[in-house]
Length: 139
Image (cartoon, rainbow, N blue to C red; front, top):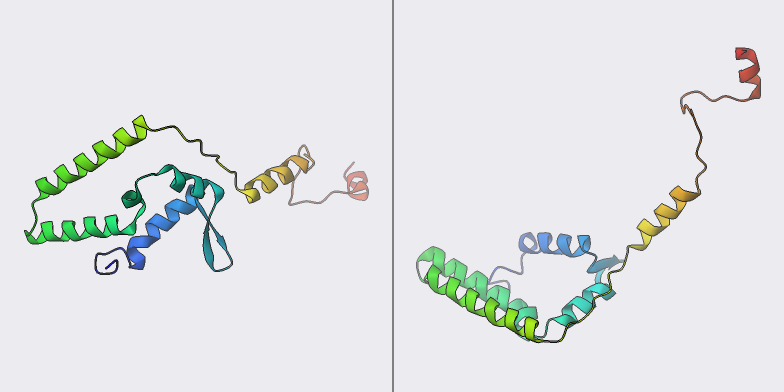
């Protein structure tokens, strides 16, 4: 069902996966994509199971293709989306708030610590090495 409805192909997944990486919702461990703690917390905040399901995206893709062929009304699809978003928004607003902990990427923290520990040199020219002997010969 998923491949038939357009969400099983790499071309449709690449942008989604890239966004999940940028937002630090997933990370790569060896050859696997693993949800980060932030990603897991985010999914846990979504209470509507349909909204978390790939079937919903597949259903939308199917309806959009039918609209292209003239087999489904665009206005009907739009009204369905408006109704669904309105209901979901009401559930979120009326529900209890959940806190998501955002995690910094470990590599970035390590890089920042390395930058802080490097000594700073004034008027340093990487093209020309100077030692005590070279300085005396210049004077």
